[in-house]
Length: 168
Image (cartoon, rainbow, N blue to C red; front, side, top):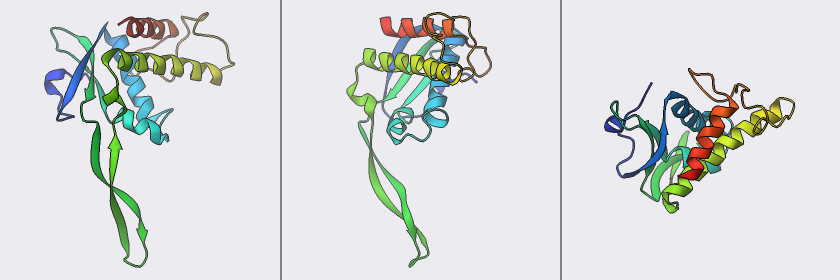
């Protein structure tokens, strides 16, 4: 399902980063990285929680389908979180906690570089799970299992997106 900028309601204050990328393959690669941050490779990493909760990959519009990355502008967020179960009171106790936004201190090119590094990291992670061959430089037509929803993503597609994000 495509998410467009005009329909985005995720953050009260945000900044829009232009990627210079177009096309369904690039959109799926970036959306797959989002998925890996929250429900995949980095699912149990508290450090990555600040990243996936403060970004969203969207398309600009149907007329101009440039892929955009939306980043939350707030540096800190105050939330109520579960603390522990109280046997004496017979209920869950909560406490307030500050959550930091790691993107708040990054300029646009650093955010794009961060996403590019995550793409390369996912390709090398899958490479290690499958015989350890160097797919990044040699097997560009190798299909990836960890990235992509509807499209078949290969290493060459990831490398093109990686190079574009590193150049911007």
